[in-house]
Amino acid sequence: MIYLIASDIHGSAYFTHKLIDAYMKNDASRLILLGDILYHGPRNDLPLEYNPKKTYALLNMYRDSILCVRGNCDAEVDQMVLEFPLMADYATLFLEELGGRMIYLTHGHHFNADNLPPMQKGDILINGHTHLPVAKEENGFVFLNPGSISIPKGGWPNSYILYKDRTFTVLDFEDNVLMSLTISG
Image (cartoon, rainbow, N blue to C red; front, side, top):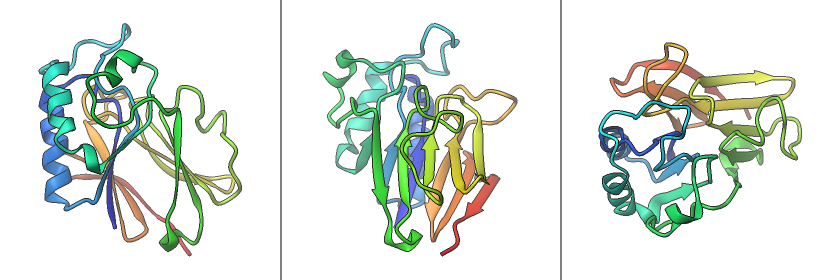
């Protein structure tokens, strides 16, 4: 099973194309989006090729493969044009290959490494929001953040996470590995 995990698209049609290209190239079975899909927000500059209409049209073509949670820039009006559920604050996954660990997916503006959701030691928290990639184990938990595909911060490149064979790899769009974390049994 291969998952591509991305966050903070912020309406960039340019980087949505790059995201879909990476999704197809890696033969991923799921595209997991961690919110902030169409709107750029008042604190961000406009991303490259800001075009929410084109962005949602591209994503809707993959609606049956998308698992999405709501970000702080997402609203009910966005759900009116997106053909996949957007309004959940979080989602959970359990992958047998990870030994029953729970994967908690959220945007990160409510729950994050500093404010944990209901989790047990060994569980995995994947969130976006900060636009900074993370892949680390700390205090018995695993923390992952794909960064942002359209408005990265902290000098990081545009990035996403690819999950395959128990390994979460943060990549840029030139296939450079930024960080990687393999989950043991």
